[in-house]
Image (cartoon, rainbow, N blue to C red; front, side, top):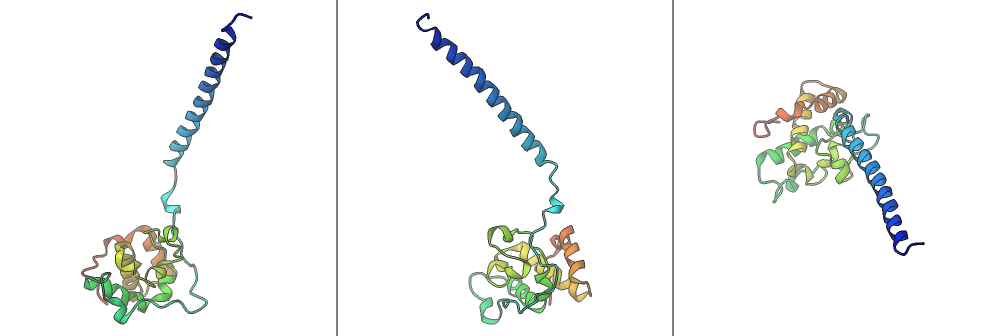
Length: 162
């Protein structure tokens, strides 16, 4: 055995092995990144309940609870007043701020059980949309379809009325 020769063979094999491993890893990463473009956002619907509540829902904030730092604009309190009129409808709607992931909410109704709804334009617009559609005689399923299509995004909270 020639001194130093073993040392030069091991790094060469190691280098070849690492090239293969890194090459495979690169192919996998590219495949994962490329597949992301085929994800269907329409199938990424947040949590909701498909049927009316089977029990009494927690109350929507009301009265003196609609004051303080979360309620600096009139439309914030007005949206909660709308939500209080249609709790079963909101129970059957998804919330596209994805608070189901971050806060464990199970429907749009959950947003109005605390102050989250007042701090989130998505929640307020969806609730105002649901209220307006309910007044037009739409069913919760029809309202949900409109929310999924993004129709709530055109709601002007300043102009939304009870």
